[in-house]
Image 1 (tube, rainbow, N blue to C red):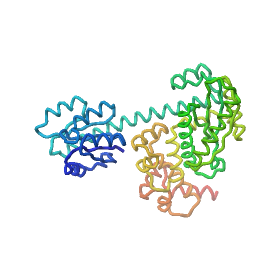
Image 2: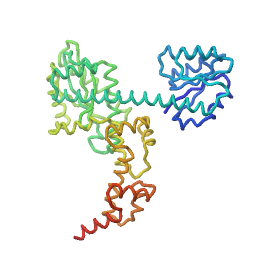
Image 3: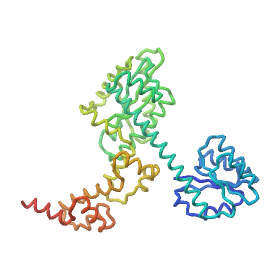
Image 4: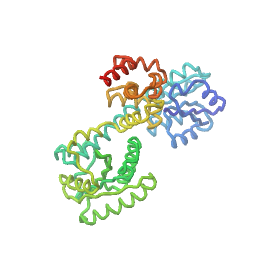
Length: 416
């Protein structure tokens, strides 16, 4: 999912570069073009390119100006310079701005392919590292806030964790919990994967609104309800603080409920004055909406200790195992990089995605072999295996016997 910008004042060169190599094979999914530095900078302000392939001498803003502006703005962009035989002085200047490489015209396809492949590999590595760091931060934040609300963390430890997360939440005069429970979730009308999408859409919208207003912070609990923690630094009394929170949430649920097409209800706990009393507000809000704190809290908390995307992928596979599935298709479905998704899935589950997919399909095949008269080859296609021979090999590899022998063994047990 790499974006690349071609900058050259010659339209024929721009068109030729677009046709010169297979960009999709290099994971370049968005190709754009500009005829000079000024147009290129406008395009990059609107939609940042990961790689810029630029000529040096152009009448509408030269390449050196473009490179200089990209570096001055601290954009993490890889730059490859296109130059003629008489432009070495300009190339030497460009090298001062840490360009990736330069190519002499006419451009050699294999050389261009190698350079772009190197750039995309470097970009993907940076992307994966940043995503993992961000996801780890969000998971840590969510779990610390939930443990605070459930009174499962010592005050000294809470203070240190919040300091690390740069969340100055312990210096406030008032605290109040509000739990958001949305109606489709309550009625159980949605698939688990759709329920996940809705939960995170509401969470992101509410948390963004809270940060903009300075009212507090939002996180998820083990029931996939959104928990809003309101904080107040002022000296207003508890009644005014609570009334303001109720009014603000009513307005928010009306606006965002319509936008997200998900009506929800707000359940408030009491106002507390001390951080260690927060669990009282949380418990009261839970009671208001009919949820109960789990007796096996630790087991349920582990549900949110994994990356949300990983859980969504697992549930999507469980619900759609019979369809054509791959990391590439799921990366589009969940709007993430396919390399990142594969590494994250392995890190979180200890299992490669294809192994997990095969395991789910084989488990369903076992059930069908036991209870249906369908041929093994028909069962293979029903559970998502396009090649019956591959199904037979995987089944025997995993279960130690062939599908037909497995069916016979099940029938013998039933007859006995």
